Length: 264
Image 1: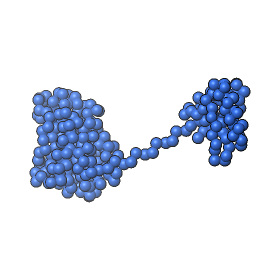
Image 2: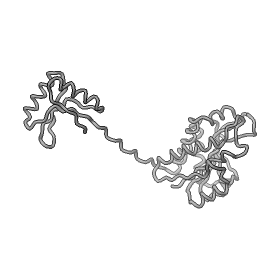
Image 3: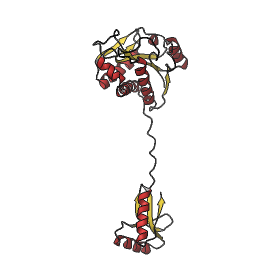
Image 4: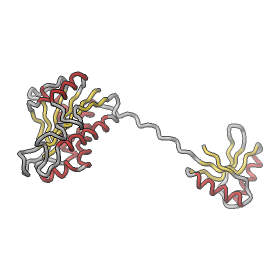
């Protein structure tokens, strides 16, 4: 599945900033980055960016890129604003094109639900708009407004890395739910190296048992193990840290036992 994320505007876009000077693009790009990282934990997903940190990519260029790549879903990420001074406008909303394409509405509803649940902000609902990125894309497209830059409390959230990550996770959760995306299997955990302390190896089990008795009498927790070559190996300890195994070998040698460390 091909997904295009569009962090709205750019660093140099005129006017797109909060009354205290936060650029909207700073928020948009951070959410897009987090969302890309999260989406790439799912199987058969390829993520593209419509935006660039180097320039404010024109809208036509963004939608042309999405159309030429044949992406399946286009998600535009924004922060909202009402006028250019602090005010009480608040909440999150998600937009689809005015014709209300069925799949876009379903996706928007899921993304909106996750945004509201995860951010705790007011639900402004799923709405329609004649935005270029919704009108000129040939695939399912939505645009999410993740809070108001002109609201003091929400602007503080928009500046927060934690909130940006929360919005990204909400958007991805909606996409994953809509398209039944499956997580990639977790990579196998690397096996831990175990440092074992061996005090002897014998063909005869009786000799191994004798050594175990001697070690036990000295306070060591020893035991004998038969290996694949039919040798009875007497072990006195096993450690995840080699320093601990080396310390035990030193102590054993001081008590007159011939011991060494081997890794497995």
